[in-house]
Amino acid sequence: MIQIKDLHKSYHMGSNSLHVLKGINFNVKEGELVSIMGSSGSGKSTLLNILGMLDEADKGSYILDGVPIKNLNEKVSAQYRNKFLGFIFQSFNLINYKSALDNVAMPLYYQGLKRKERVDKAMHYLEKVGLAEWSHHLPSELSGGQKQRVAIARALASNPKVLLADEPTGALDSVTSHEVMELIQGINDEGKTILVVTHEDDIAHMTKRIVNLKDGVIIDDSPVKQIRAKAHV
Ligand code: ADP
Ligand code: MG
Image 1 (spheres, rainbow, N blue to C red):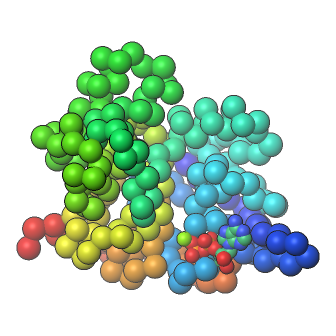
Image 2 (cartoon, rainbow, N blue to C red; image 1 turned 120 degrees about the horizontal axis):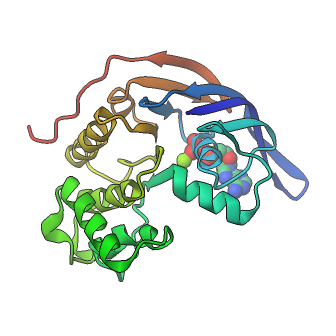
């Protein structure tokens, strides 16, 4: 599903430059649930943003579902992003003045679905994350965990090949983190390929493989015995 080879990325600020990714190699197969672990500043978000086609590497290759991701114009890359990828962020990134339902339905607008299809589909995914009764509420009326579940429904609605989650539990307490990870595990059980960036060891152990990043290089990449999240204890 994902093949990356010798990926490099630097940031340039005036005459200074910061070499953040220093030759990253890894592959992700369809159906995997992988965490990218590392301390703050190790390059996790930089890597995820490149995988998410939100940013481009300086060097190296990236193949997503058989498609080389390189030198794409803004329009084509937006199309691929829409078709291939779903995003989940630490800060949820919901639109504050839109209901849960409209937040989930919005990406479907860009896929050219008619209003009724968008609403039906959005409702289906809100049900899937257990928030059917909250569909007409604004984000400000939802708890952190509920907001993240709306964001997960939104990411799923376009049926992407890969879900990319950047610190999805970073803004949540531990009980709510388990709730969100239980949902992510369930989605992976159904076969979805998911990458989770985290700096928390217990969250990483809820995935099936941990890729450890340190100072821009992978220092370890190993399968782990998955610990099931328990939302209700
Ligand atoms: P992580 O997600 O692991 O905390 P990041 O990928 O966000 O790490 O950042 C890696 C390093 O790159 C950090 O030192 C950060 O300050 C720097 N960095 C990230 N984004 C930018 C940017 N747009 N411009 C300059 N430096 C950046
Ligand atoms: Mg980060």
